[in-house]
Image (cartoon, rainbow, N blue to C red):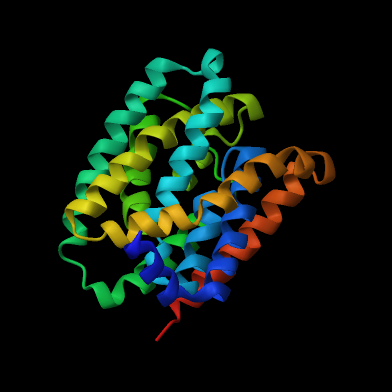
Length: 246
């Protein structure tokens, strides 16, 4: 427990409250539309304190996706999920190798650039057919992006964007339950996820729980289109701020 109090002393109560608000919003959005926690949270949390991302965001995305996937188990396409696991494993290994090469002082800019790229891909609305080849390619790209920037979702969301909301959730959420632990393992191997990041994850749990239970209210209040537009706007702004950070 001494570790968590030392970390809290470093972050400060204001920083923690801001981080909890970010996780709350991201979790509420992802529980509503199947994607959003990582894309929304990473840029903002890095600006609050780099200890919060990407590792702790990946932890919380995994927990939220695991809970949601249990309810979607009858809709999961397991052959497609098996291809997704292969693709994300390839991408994660490549990203882990990149993390050993990239200078750590430049990681905020890399994170910002990848977030902007993810938002651009998601907003552009390019259409691809869902085939074994495109599943493998999209999930490999997601593995690279998720490990380095903590945001796996954009390439896979791009692939499934023309599908029904139920199929999108059934593809994305089980994928996150596999992709996020792989990315955390790669970060740990590269020395970027340790006890500080573990305790940072613990500190953010109340925001995750509150966001999960608030999701039904968001669904009743706003349309998925409005939620998506707000998510992309805020995510793009946070990514640009990181990209331009000195």
